[in-house]
Length: 455
Image 1: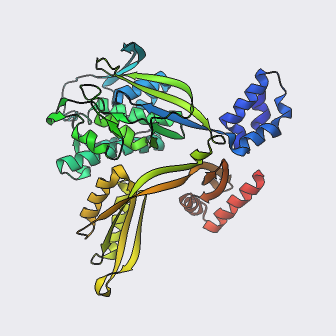
Image 2: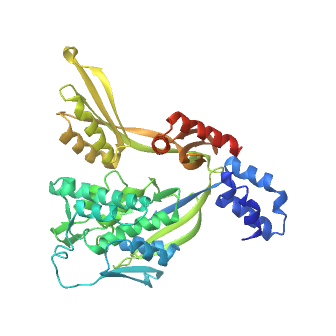
Image 3: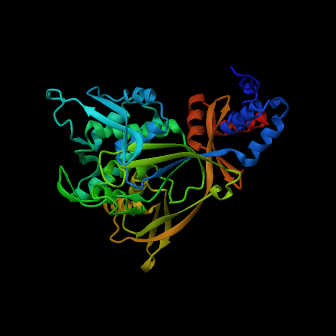
C-alpha cells in the first residue's frame, strides 16, 4: 500500500477523501516533494467546496454510430479487453469470438471489432438462432450473471428497439421478433456497450448531433430508405444530420445506444478531454467511417451551470371520466415502464358536473409516440393533447450511508457546487425495515445517527 493510501485509509468516512480529485491532489503534493500530511485541511477544503470532478463521456458521431464501432471506440479509449471478454462470457453463448485489431479509415488509426459467429449444425435449440423475440432476449439477459446495472442498461437499449419495431410492424412490444438485432453479434454489441459504460462509471454521456447517412439498404424486410424506419423511430426528438455519406451511417443498434444513454446533445465540447478513442466501421468513403469518443473531466466547482441541468420535455394529457379507477394503477405502471419521467392524476370536475381525472405524463420528446400508444391502449380516452416544456433539474449524486441495519442510498442535490438538499431512498428503508423486523422510523433514525458519527 502506498504511503498516502495508508494515511487516508482511516479517514475514508469523509467521502471526498476517497474521491479521484482528493487522491489526485495527494499525488501532486508527493510529486513536488511536499508534505501532504500537513495539508489535509487545505485539500479537504478544496474538495468540499465543490471542486470535485465530473466525468464526461462525449460521443462525436460525425460519421454515425453502430454497435461494432461503439465497441471499437470503447476499447480504443482504454476499456480493459480482458474484463470485457470476461463479462461477455456471462451470456449463454459460446459460438462466437471477438476479433479485435488495429486498422485505419481515411488515415485515422483506431480499433476494429468483429463479432465472428460460428455456423454449427442446426438443432432444435438452434433453430431461429438469428430470430429472437423481445421476450427471449429479456429472459437471456435477466437470467445471466451480469451485474444489475449492466442488465438495466442492456434492457433499456433493447426496449428502445422493441418499441420502434412494435410501432412500425403493428405488434405488441413483447411479441416483437428481431432479425438482424436478434442475432448473437447484435446481442454482443448491445450488452458489450452496457458493460463498457458500467466500467467507465461516467457522470454524464453527451452526444453530438447524429449523422445518419443517405441512400438505401437491404435487410430482412427488403429494400428500405436510410435512415431505416427503426432508426428513424428511435431517433425522434434527437438532432440528426443526413447526406454526408452514401450509406447507412447509424444503425438501429447505434440509435438504441444513443436513446438509452444520452444526457444531452451538443456540438460544443466544454470539458477537458483526458482520453480519445476511435472505433472503426466497415465502410470505405472519403469521410472516415469512424466513431470518436472523448473521455474527459470538468470541475463541478468551476462549472456552476452544470449544477442546473436544463432540457426540453413534453407533457401529454387527457381527461377521463368513464374508466374503472382500479385500472389507473396498471396505466401508471405501463407508462413508467415505457420511459415516462413522471405520471400523475389530478381530480377535476368536467361538464355536467361530472367528477373526472386528468392523466398527465412527463417524458422526453423522443418518447412521446410510445407514451401516446400506452394511453391509447390502456385508457378509455378518445383524445390526447400535448405541449413542450422546459425542464431545470439540480445535479444529483447518489451516495451510500452505512447504518447498523445495512447500507442505504441517499440522493444529494447540488447547486453552485454544494449540497443543498438530500433525500433518502424510501425503497431501501422499506427493504431494511422488513429484513431487520424494525419500523421505518428506526431506519430513518439510524441514518441520522450515521450522519452524526461521520461529522
